[in-house]
Image (cartoon, rainbow, N blue to C red; front, top):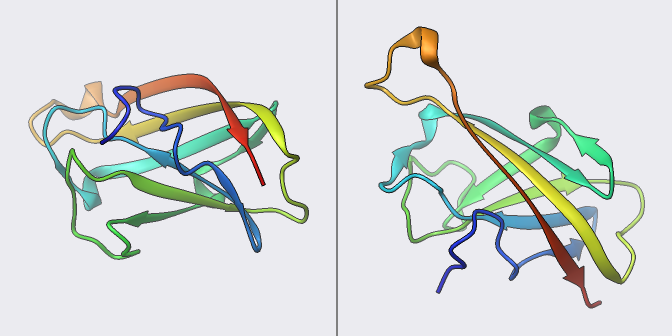
Length: 119
């Protein structure tokens, strides 16, 4: 089951080459992945632009659709793992909605949460 917030508490962890965090789609229905403009992450004041964030949806890097009940896994490469303990994580997600006029695009969701890395 997913947290109601966009940034999920489960899945925040170190990886072999950096860290990953999971996002729930904040929109009420699924979206095609070509409508995802990108996401930026900030961890403890260090910003990672959309170009530094790799996506995986449902275990696939080339998924065609992001369903509302499947978290996206966002991965970031860094030289050292994040320290064990609490971190302030902020995400900014940008989506294009096919039915909203271009001059009002993209739709932006932002959120900040305190997450913990346990190992």
